[in-house]
Image (cartoon, rainbow, N blue to C red; front, side, top):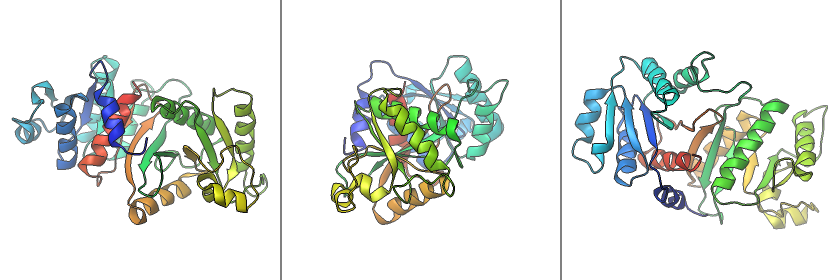
Length: 299
């Protein structure tokens, strides 16, 4: 795939229409994205909170007969209600509206009535459409996992592989990104995590995939750069997935690519019982719509 619209088309082709619980969706970009999802049959919607505003803004738009509104007094209450709707089997997705991410994740992570399995890990997965690149690129984490330990990084890898396979990548190529190609346990302990995962992937533990690293970002996305540096990697300069060592480098890459390379994105948080669409409050309607479409692919 080269364009995010291909994910939208895949979502439209599903046999069953999932229901998304939209948490406090009073902002125009979220409401427009939900209206697009209803119009194209990607999802039915339960809007939690802002009952009167939602019905007034979406009244008469195509598909709004499949819109239900549930009242909540505050964004925090709306997050808890959305989680409860999932536990009751009434919705299969959660989407963030005009609510802080930490408020939503607090409800999701609640040990008594949240959406996490014991030992579960949440990670943020971005799908980027970069005009100068020949295919969509998955990468993470840029927003949720600050500095993954070995167990969290394994969970991150498994979740990103699952997303890639759902997008039709039968043998995902995963680059464990770092500033150099050498394992340096003393200065960069993360490179030892990389070495372990690369070795385990080679035995088939993570299914059919190619995992290599540590490698710098240029050599995993440009075969010529790898050849010039004399790097003989099975990725062959054509990675599908970039795993960053920590949130700082991942977030800088994300912001730089959207600012200077006109990258368009879809993003979601994986690892809970259901996919979580957790866009930035500043994202536009198209980004939120693409993100919702990508989330439905995981169901």
